[in-house]
Structures are given as structure tokens and as C-alpha cells.
Amino acid sequence: MSNFTSRPVLRWAVPAAAAVAVVGAGVAAKTLAVAAEPDLPPRTAAQLLVDLQTARLDGLSGTVVEHADLGLPAIPLLTGDQSAKLTSLVSGKHTLRVWYSGPDKARVSLLGTQGQSDVIHNGTDTWLWDSQAKEAQHFKGDAGAEHPGVNPSPSDLPKSPQEAADLALKAIDPTTQVTTGNSAKIAGRNAYELVLRPRDTSSLVGEVRLAIDAQEKVPLRVQVLPRGTSNAAFEVGFTSVSFARPDDAEFTFNPPAGTKVTEGDPAKLAQEQQGKAQQHDGNAADKPKTAVIGTGWTSVFVIRNSGAGSGANSDEAKKAQDAIGQLPAGNGGRTFNSKLVSVLFTDDGRVLIGSVTPEKLAQVAADPAAALK
Image (cartoon, rainbow, N blue to C red; front, side):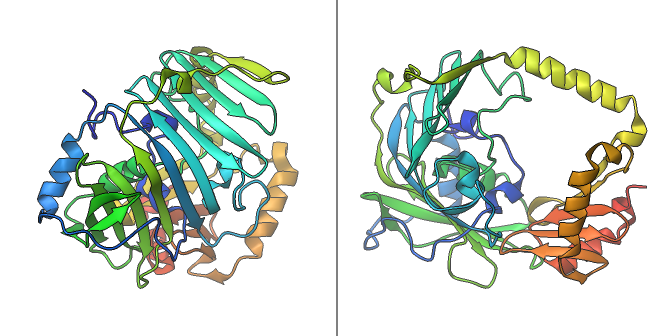
């Protein structure tokens, strides 16, 4: 009895992230596997929202293509087309295979030219496998659910249309205009389109487009368009999909010969992290101060490091400061701007991050609530 809101498809594979995680990627001038617009019975935006929230899904498998081009510099292991590293999802074009057979069985496989990375969840077993590195991690228990310190994926970017839609729908509030778009045929299936538009023009997001399967009522594709452009800056969608339950064999993982297997203990790791947090809390001078200013599409995350104990990583700190010093100056600090994310390093030592214009970050930086003193 899983539904869209309580148990979204493959939610176990990607942590719940802020809206910026949805828009923190980019590209795709071309749409994915879209044919002529089908003739479908009309449905309102309200009806489509109800469809998404009440859809039930017993099984699914298919191929997903993700395009991302945030405008980031070329960083090894973080960028590159067809890389099998999960961290590479922030840039380029990537192909994934997904399987879902109820809330206790799910699998995501990121396919690269030189290998693949898999996240496999089967009952109380969760496996992380990197074929190129010949390494696998095994967690016993519901990794990531009861122990938030453990998450199967090192990347917060959505790896399926369902995950992207789940994050996008969290942003719906009075600041969002919700309408319908054109119908489409995606992965050979008829789909309606739901369009979300931020009302605040300081948001870098122009609109989010969700293509919803006309029969199964689940997302087949999600696109994010920056404000002022008709081209998607982020797109994740099925190129082929089946709603039949996959064979149980898809969720059984046997490490190949030569694979280094590490047994993980989510409970122990969570306890260690809790202990470190308590120790960190004991020294207020070392604890960074944080705040979230605003809500919805234009919320801004603010952090100020105390600077105490920075000598332990003086080389890394110096490299970071040198890199920040190369950024353009303005708005009371140094700024980094991409299609969907802006970052402001203020002169007084704060960092502000949001899917908003640089001018909006400067405005938030001047807010007494963001001073963090």
C-alpha cells in the first residue's frame, strides 16, 4: 500500500534534500524519447496533483537517462559523461537502470563506460557496489531509515523521475503557480504534464515540468528550466519502462570474485556520529553557526565557521581560501554563480547558498537574522 507521499519509488536510494538539490544540476536542450503529442482526456492541475499523491505502484523497471550541466568547472570524479561514479551525476549525461518491487526491494544501477555503481536494497540487506574499484559495502538493517547518518548514496541528486518529482512537490506552497502543460509520449507511454512556476522572480528556477503517466499516475520525466530560458537545465526521465514486478533475482547481490567486501554497521556508525556531535557540542567555539533564511524556492542557507581549530587543516584551508580569492568580487564578498545555484562568500566569513540571484544573496546577507554572531 505504498503511495507517492509516504513511500516514493526508490526513496531509500536518495536522501531527502532541500529544493536546491532538485535544481542543483543541469542541461538538456533535447527532450528524452518524446514523440508527437497524444490526444488525452483533459485533466486539471488539481486532478494531476491528486493523481501523484494517490498513485500506487507495485513494481517497476526501466532505463533512466539523466542530463546535468550546472556550469561547474571540470573537477575529476565529479564531472564527466557516462562515468560510473555516483558523484558524477552533477554534470554530463548518464544512464541508469532502476528496479522496484515494493518498499523492501529496490535497485539503482549507474552505468558507465568503464563500469557501474549499484545500490541494492532487499529486505534488511543493503549493498553498495563499485565494479570499477572492485569494492562493495554491505549494511544489515534498514540503512538510512532508522540511522540517518548512513545513506546508500553519496550524491543528493535524484536518480529517477519519482525522486525528482518528490523533491519538487515539496516546494508547492502559495509561492508556486501550478498549471498544466502539453501532453507527451515518453518511453512509448502517454503522459500529462504538470508545470510548477515560482512566483518570486529572485528564484533562478523558471519552472519545473513533471510528465505524469496517464495510466499509472507516476512521473515519467522531470525537467528543471532556469528562469528566462526554454531549455531544461536538468532532466531525468525514462527512455523505457515496465510496470510489471521485476524478478526477485534482480535484488540478490553476490559479490563477484576479487571484490573487497566491507561489512557496515549502521547502528554503530550512527552512535559514533552522535558521540562526535555531542563532543562537538561541548566546545561551542568550534561549532559552526547556521540558519535558513526564507522559505520555498528562495530559501537561503547561511553558515559561519568559528575559525577555531582551523590549524589542523591549515593546508586545506589555505587552498580553499586561495580558490575563493579567485572568484569575482561583489555584493559584499566573492560570488560563484551557475544556472541554478548562487554562492556568496562574504568578507566577514559567512557562506550563503541558494537557488536565487546574487542580488538576493546580498539582500539576505544584510538581514540581521543572517548575521550569525
